[in-house]
Length: 373
Image 1: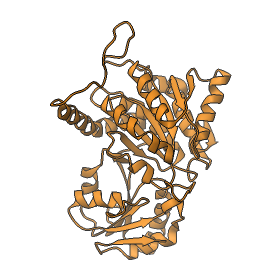
Image 2: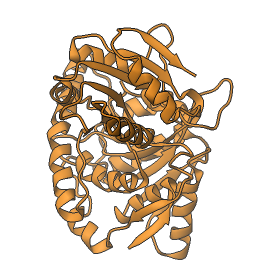
Image 3: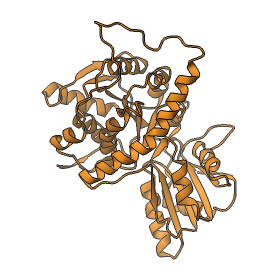
């Protein structure tokens, strides 16, 4: 079934098709329409799930952790300041190795207040132990939610996943999205049947108790699970491609086979950058793009492999770590072991556009940080 739906609608469909059972929620712009859509389906009987309005985002993540610990498949969504309020429980959820799926509809952090998208909210959680997927279009939003459960629930992973959707750019924009048949998804994603011990009132146990010498052991297991997730993501994406014809991976290379210059980007702005690459290619310029689809696990090997023959590289950050620079550029430099041109652009949702991407390609070749206004 093909429909014109928003990114928020695609996220809601992902949760519905995945048969999420518990939906704790708290409204915040621009993600509220995800929860409203799910609430409507539950009220009409089209979706069998428990809808739990909470008093804050901190409570939402607490409820997600509790329900997942009891063996339920859970889902919720948030944005910006709401994600910041979840921070304490984000670490708890990943530390308890719970396969929670959360959609973050990214929005610049205040103050001052903006309603438009940048990536500082999601990247502020990069060290919390969550898998992170950045979507480029609404179809990828739906697909990533469904695949996310298969990935997160794998015994060799068991980590929560955050799926990032650019606020308004995707969340409020309608695009054609193929909605799979429920029977196909049921075959691809069976009912959640955790292999690990779950909470049971008949057999009380302590969860997340105090440890001292063992704490480092638990953290090493968490890191191992993150490393394991790379192979799992590739395998699940391969299965999804066989089912739907839509292929994904850790990164998306574009026109890099013979590229001499390339820009690295994440999120929905990659669509405009692709247009720019095509335009410059028609003029005979050997340029390309690398979209980072996963931020955690960070696709170091894929970045090295795809960019090894590219002479001049730039990284576009829709984020800023004051006193350090672009967050993604710092990590790309570390894995490549050489300088790249770091561009800070699109903060607070400021429009970038093809003209500015052309400027960036012209400015490559220096290990500097440039702000593009």
